[in-house]
Amino acid sequence: MSRRKPILCVDFDGVIHSYVSPWVNEVTIPDPPVPGALRWLWEATEWFDVQIYSSRSKSEAGREAMWQWMAKYSAQEFGEDHPMSLAERGGDGTIVYPIGFAHEKPAAFLTIDDRALTFEGDWSDFGESPADLLSFKPWNKRPKPAPLAPYAGADGTAVAGQGRLGVGNQDGLVANGPLLTSAQLPEPTALEIGAEVRRRGLMGSYEN
Ligand SMILES: [Mg+2]
Image (tube, rainbow, N blue to C red; front, side, top):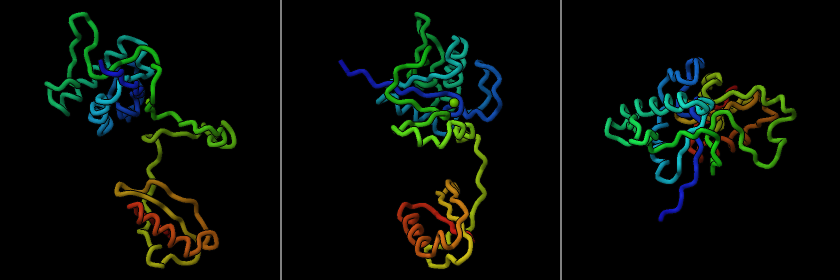
């Protein structure tokens, strides 16, 4: 007898469903999956009891809609014969699917959600006031950062004046630092950060 797999609880909208269009109702799922979501979840079923739990989950119709949507897009991604493409109920009327559609929030080992913060034991991590959380935006609702000038710190060309340090990967900028004066970010610091940025395989930018 095998050990029971730990439950991985996964939110639906903004995590599996790309959720670009506005909310309609619990049975309407207008957008395609987030790229990589279906494949990741299918792989996760090897180690986890993957349970989808969403605000759509409280009605049978909402759970059915998520299941049919998953099966439809899985058929495109994995082919009609794949277990993730199954869209028909078993003989006893239950959903037969590699992933569960929980009726209520499961006691999960871990949860994946686009509107959650990981508590690390320190409430001050959440800002000076609870009101700071009002500005939270999930990943797909944040404004796209403007690209910065190419990194110029590593070869010593970071010059005096104001500068801004940005860090990105091959997909673009992922973090943009505050505007600093050269006193706050003198050249050696820019050089050190440049070296760190290159060591981590990232692209940096020092803009004057
Ligand atoms: Mg969500």
